[in-house]
Image (tube, rainbow, N blue to C red):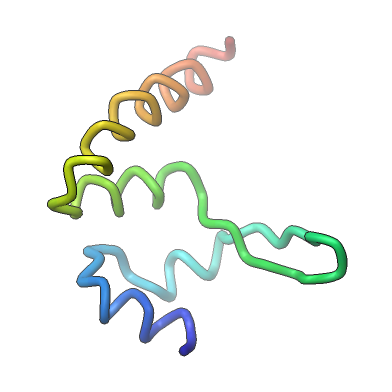
Length: 71
């Protein structure tokens, strides 16, 4: 399954092309993976109806606020 299909199947309210454009690449023991931005992760969590994603949202938004304030 490719990235686009994953977003469609999950019903994530984020444009997959926008996510891929800014996704970082990380090497995990020879396996290169793409990692979405904090902003996109927050958008994905907001669009989810899962309780766990809602719980994560407060912590992610706190990190985003600290980044913006330069802490």
